[in-house]
Structure formats: structure tokens, C-alpha cells
Length: 173
Image 1 (cartoon, rainbow, N blue to C red):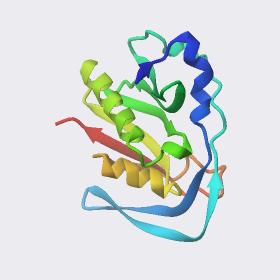
Image 2 (cartoon, rainbow, N blue to C red; image 1 turned 180 degrees about the vertical axis):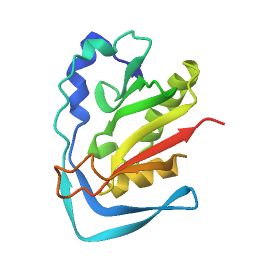
Image 3 (tube, one colour; image 1 turned 120 degrees about the vertical axis):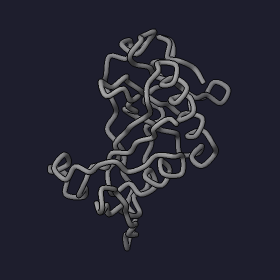
Image 4 (cartoon, helix red, strand yellow; image 1 turned 90 degrees about the vertical axis):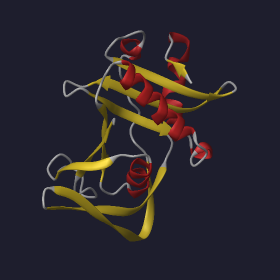
């Protein structure tokens, strides 16, 4: 795992590869807490996020933000990008692994790095958002200790495939 340095900026968007959407999370709020059920699609579809075009130098050596890259030899296989949120959470702006390394433990290593970074900053936990039609990502977050903490039904109004943005949290104990 490497904290971003100028010579590795070229590797950041390498991890932005297509992924399958095969189901949806349907959230429910009852008695003061969130739960959800999973609904599988009749047919899966492939999608890809647009490439991020940020000033990557802003993530180098900063106190309130960081970007870590996972490598296998010289090949970048994953990345996680974090900021210190005003809520005292480490907010995960992005996490991605290349297709060939999904389900290999790289994602967990990235989350572990994020947790170490957040604890070093004396933050109370990690947070992130995911779209309700990305069941694989939601399952991944739940598997690694994140809980559904909120839902926004308007944020993705411009996307007919997304019903809700889901807010996931991992509070350090």
C-alpha cells in the first residue's frame, strides 16, 4: 500500500474498470433503524464510473485527505480516496480495484488502510455512499462492518436506473 506520490498519479484511474450491476438494495426505515432487502435483476448489466479528473496533488502529504494505491509488483490494482469530513468521519470518496483482483482481498486491504488513517486522525469512523443498484458494493461494505445509516431519494434524480443513494457507516468501537 502506498500513499500517493507525484510519480504514481498516472496510476489512479487505472482502477476504474467496469463492474456488473445484478441487483438492488431496497431500504426500509422502521423503529428508528434501517434495514434492507435485496432484489436481483432479471438481467445484469455492466457499467463504469466516469474517470475522476481532480487535482491529484491536493491528496499528497495533506492532513485532511489522502489517496492510497495498492500495487502488485509494479501494477496498480486498487485505490482508496479519503477526506476528513466535518462530522468527524473519514469519508471514502472512492474505492476501486481492477477486475482481475476483485474478491482477492485487495478491497479489504484498502478498507483497513482507510481505517488506520481515520484512527490516526482520531476520527470516530468511516462513511461512504453507494447507489442502490450496486448490490455487490453494498454487500462488500456490509461484510466489512458498515451499516446502512441513511437514504437519499433525490440525489440521483437525473439517473433513471438509481432510486436512492445509500449512506453506509462504520463506527469505531
